[in-house]
Structures are given as C-alpha cells and as structure tokens.
Length: 116
Image (cartoon, rainbow, N blue to C red; front, side, top):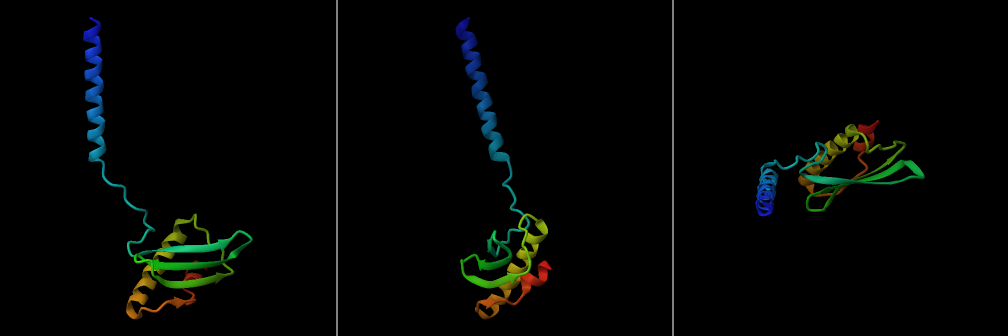
C-alpha cells in the first residue's frame, strides 16, 4: 500500500514538473520599454549638489558618441516617462545627424529646448 502511494506521488510530481517546463517555453519574450531606442543609448551625468546642471551624452550602438550637451538651469527628472521619450527622440535625431557628416556635435540646445 505504501509503495502504491509513493509511486502515485512520484508520478504526480513528475507530470507537474513537465507541465511547468512546457509553460516556460510558450511565454513570449518581454518587450523593451518604449523609451529604449534600437539605434543607441544616452547617459546623463549629474550631481546631487547641483541638480540643475547636467551633461548628457548620446551614443550609437557601436559606442561612438554622436552628441553631447551641457544643460544648465533645468533639472532632469529621469523618473518621468515623458522625459525619457524626449531623450529617445533627441537620440534618434542626433544619430541621423551624425550619420550625415560623422562629426560629434556639442551644445546644439536640443535637450534644453525639449525639456523646457
């Protein structure tokens, strides 16, 4: 009797584990956030003692800096989705400009105008 119960428990857990593995394979891959660009990325340098002064670097996927801007007088809140979407738009704009002439542009005031 004990062997029968033990065998049924083993069979139950074995079928349960196969079902959980099968569910993992059928799940779709997670989608990246909307503010993540396929063309590159951006980095914000800031300091807690001077929150209204930041330097923003924009890079393409080959880790080449395509645009750099120093922003004064505007506090950049990276918690807001709207701010991240504006930075994505400027990133894509700067990558297109860089592809045209392959020169690093600096302080064109694209970020300052977009965030004000």
